[in-house]
Amino acid sequence: PEAGGHEKRNRRIGVMGGTFDPVHNGHLVAASEVADRFGLDEVIFVPTGQPWQKADRDVSAAEDRYLMTVIATASNPRFSVSRVDIDRQGITRTVDTLRDLRRMHPDAELYFITGADALASILSWQAWKELFDLARFVGVSRPGYELHIEHLSGHLGDYPDDTVTLIEIPALAISSSECRQRARSGRPVWYLVPDGVVQYITKRGLYQPRDRDAASAS
Ligand code: ATP
Ligand code: MG
Image (cartoon, rainbow, N blue to C red; front, top):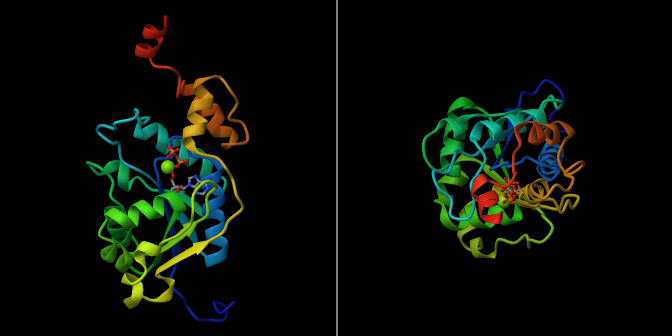
């Protein structure tokens, strides 16, 4: 409301980082809700770089995750996708994502959007003081995860109230893990991910049992 008249305000840009393997409707609702509540001009989805090794599973190729994110966001004029993390070598750290986007949008106010689970882990192991200088943080509710940041209280004293904001969004109990598992066992992912993403998963044969598994199963 205060943004009317001739007053020029800085662009507000949301940053939604994730593995997006695959991107699903929970991600899209989170971005859309935060954009609405904070009057964001744009939300940039940023698929993470390719982990050179991951203990529990193989992450799909960065190019596939990037393209699925493009497909999922293409129809929304306020959504875009950035390659900064997939084009940078090494493990993605939120601080690098925000430094790169800050460089590209020096005058914008950045809002880093994360689910309750990811917020807790980002703020527990990364240099969050620098993170807070680069962006505001918005933690969204996510079914199955408590939304709390007690471990930060006391440290946040010097920062403005809007440094970290927690908001409730419509609950979508969807995870990429669940989508992968479904695709792998031939169950539907329709309506959990955008139609184009369902079709892309099929087209590329993503999340199918690997040869190694097939061999050991036979
Ligand atoms: P995985 O099951 O592989 O961990 P994921 O569903 O958690 O996948 P990510 O790519 O890890 O998806 O998540 C990117 C961001 O989106 C994180 O901040 C995560 O907390 C948030 N997020 C994911 N799913 C939801 C959801 N259903 N509601 C709200 N936020 C979500
Ligand atoms: Mg996750």
